[in-house]
Length: 290
Image 1: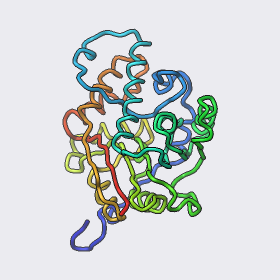
Image 2: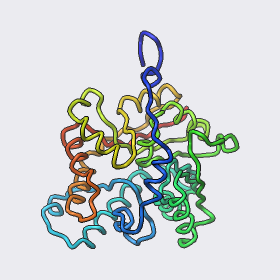
Image 3: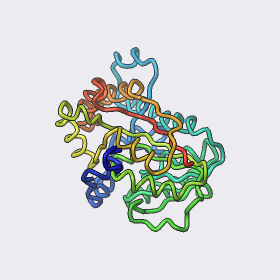
Image 4: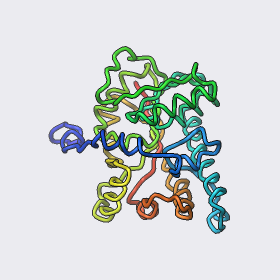
């Protein structure tokens, strides 16, 4: 918040939004040779996010067959979803998966926790995959998916219907946090929660990470924002912060292991530099509508 003007910091600076067509094309073009698909443990529930590890020194010093390494990565990606579900502390709720990708988190939240999920994505390929997997896993009564852009969609018929919002490494494509959180606030019931997993940068350290940040944004078509911007936007749109957990130590091993894969994306070293030196943060934000 700018104390002189009373305007949230994000509103006082120009927000550069992604090219939605390029973002959609980025994910539409991902095939079955992509690391995200190959690392899926059962080749059905596919994620587009990081994984978490505990006590992994013995894992980092080993050599792996590619198939075994991909399974190790995939299991860690599943664990991130379970970590988020535990943080939410909600059972049999109604959730809105904002940027659902190929439906990975929604499918786990429905299958393992009994939640009813509505997931949205701007990618037609992701949408088709998520819908097929919901049928294959007999979850079509618990999960539905739509091709929508949260900034442009008319969600008036859904206001006040959801117990929680889920956004796992999707807000990196949604840098207008004030508009985004305002939409979420409308969708949530009173007392509803919003859980975010996000890679953010530290504004004070941008000069030290400028090249790496540009590389990551170019590879993934993202617009990674600052940690402070998330907090300021959440508060200014009427959320309280229930939990804020830094997960850098749990995420770093994931990218170290990805460096061993022949399917690595080229972003791993840049992410590791930022995470290990504190220029990037990887945070779990748990917000509550009051």
